[in-house]
Image 1 (cartoon, rainbow, N blue to C red):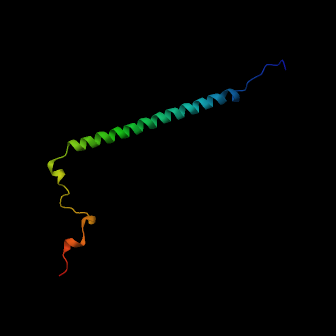
Image 2: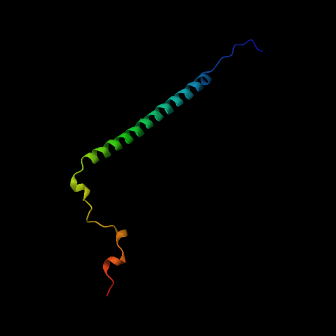
Image 3: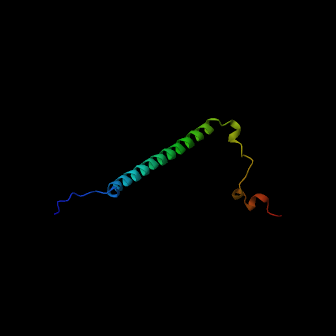
Length: 81
């Protein structure tokens, strides 16, 4: 046991401060990402509801004449006789 007082250097005391600042930055970044994700989700929901309310009767039949390739079969085009 020595009688000399321990002198703490600035490096030792700033080590905890750096960790605290790092955790603070990570916390704020996490909060920002959560707010951004929530904003994107809410914006998508509002946009889809807005588009749903603004439909017209013509929108229900907009693709009535179009046929997908999977719906065609050889029986629709005759037997070749």
